[in-house]
Image (cartoon, rainbow, N blue to C red; front, side):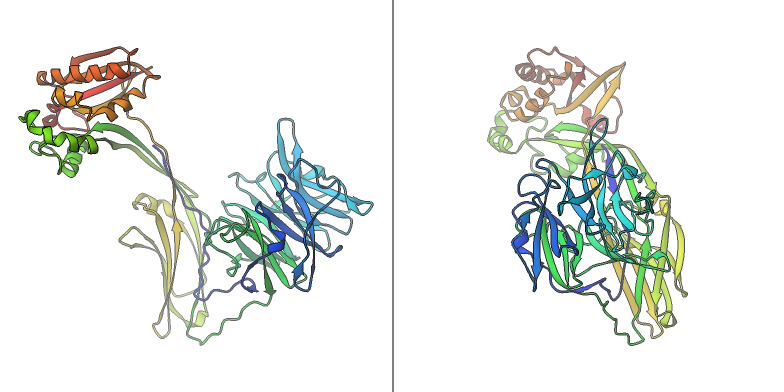
Amino acid sequence: MKKALLILFAIFIYANQISAFDVSQPKLCDVLNTKNDDFAPVWNPYENVLYFNSISKGFSRFYIAEYSNGIFSKPNEYLAKLNKSRNNQSYISFISENEAILSDYRMSNSRSYINLHRTHKEKNRFVQAYAIDELECDNFSGHSTITDDGKTMVFASNCYSSEDDTDLLITYIDNSGNWSDPIPLQELNTPGNEITPYFVSYDTLLFASNGMQGPGGFDIYMSAKISGQWQTPRPVTAVNTQFDESDPAIINDELFLFASNRSGGKGGLDIYCCELNREPQEIESTGEELDLEVKTFTLSITKNRYIETIPVAYYPFQYRKLDTNYLLDKEIIKNDINFRKILAKGLSVGSVTDTLGLMKSNIEYSKLNLITKDSIVLKPSMLDIKLNAGPKEAIKNWKCYFEFGSANTRFKIAEGVLMPFHKLFPYSYLAENTDFEDSIKVVLSAYNLKEQEFEETFKMTISTSLTSGYNVTKTKNKKYYTFIFPKVKPEVITSGVYDSIFEEIGQFNSVAKSISVEYLDYSGKSSVEAIKKKIKNINKRIPIKSRKSSYRNNKIYSKALSEYLVIIKIELK
């Protein structure tokens, strides 16, 4: 079995949170939405109308709506060749009054891909889009946004990512109208997915990401370019929820739009709007408060685990002779409280008649799991950690920790007095010395000059993916799947209390070559014959044989327990 633990994070912790925008409470733009997906709003300043996409007719098509005095008109489908009848064109952005770029399908030699396309107006209507040759790629490229002067474009693509995630890329148009080779926006990209960018101005960008450990899947972030560098993205906290938020857009510097699949909407994705105040919120400082910030790159932890699964029919055994060094013996000690006397050695069938009804309603088989391999892979092996706090003159000292486990065990990353702080941390040490549970926390703690502590905690959820595997043993180039069965009296086997286990064995009809029923002492021979008869009734075409076997030391059960067991081995084709 493989158990993959993937931790994706780009952490932004603030003692006092600054929202990228001051916006009102989001409201559903009711008139724009349907029971299907509605998304990708963008304002066309040349026509003074809103363009957006809807799949209300089964495919993504463009719709337009007017906006005046805070009210949207009822949208109409854009009636032009731009809307193909059976395609999924979307996410339009405008270069000029007569030119635009959008996402549409391009057919390659083998299949179609969403790529960037260009369109222009003829007779005042946009024509069917055509691929931008210099930006073609055999993978996803779309979600374009263009600066007001029409010279710079940012878009999302996984054509240029080594991890196959979508990143933001920037390209510039030259004097001949061709776009330059795209450049990844490294300051904004994570090993997660960055999508749906939107230029607020030439130096301010909105976008959505699921790689920064926001409250939901995709959340909306803002970054400003200062002295040629894109700054640390900050979440638009007023709109982000536990659901997905994406497709940000602004109308006339007064209305903020976005798409979300949060509850309370009309369909899957719905368009929401809120009034916008683009002035950032100011923090009132008393000279005593500290603002804390932690930033790291995304880390991927993959834990590969192989587990052998061994089905075991219910074991009515006594406690004596059991050994807690063995897996099955431990299970008996843990679970055999209610049935320890049922069918125990020396009891006759008549003495357990009253218990058979109880057994019929309760008996089942368990599956013992035996881990045989466990390995951890980390990317990257070194974790780049950047810390900052302020005002700097008010800091006495600080410490930064990882916190993990139900006991909230802390592992110190760094400590000091000066800020900012930058360190490459060998994360493999933590991974190899930590029993990962469902989350890891990053804690930044700082003291001001009055010995007051300021602390922020960010919880990184570990997502797990589990797949099951069979316990397959190999002997002389033969492969076997094994069931462990209790040696009980034949009358009990024929009573039907173990029928669910025999039905499980019957599921191997299509892959079984033969079945062997093995007993470890001669007193189990009568039980074996009853078991063989039961199996023959289900697996009539598969050869079944029985034989006495000897105990072989293993990780599952002790020698003391072997006299109580029958082993059913299914040879696989």
